[in-house]
Image (spheres, one colour):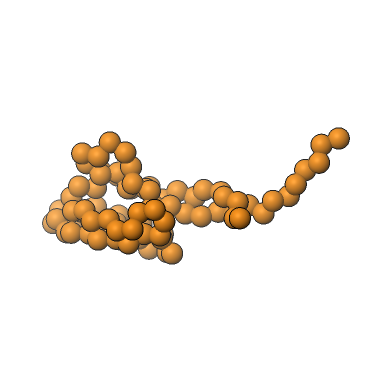
Length: 83
């Protein structure tokens, strides 16, 4: 008989940023990822270049880019097990 463990599974959200000229996407975690996603989505629509500086949580400490370099943007929900 197989014993099943009920581990509490939580979800977290990541903002995935695709930049022109970059081979890989940038994955960033924030306290309020929905607000950052909405802000970047608005900047992506703007024809005027704006310098964007973000300080995400996690391995990336600071990221700077010009808003006209955004090729795509994704808000991803991912399950994880908290240790």
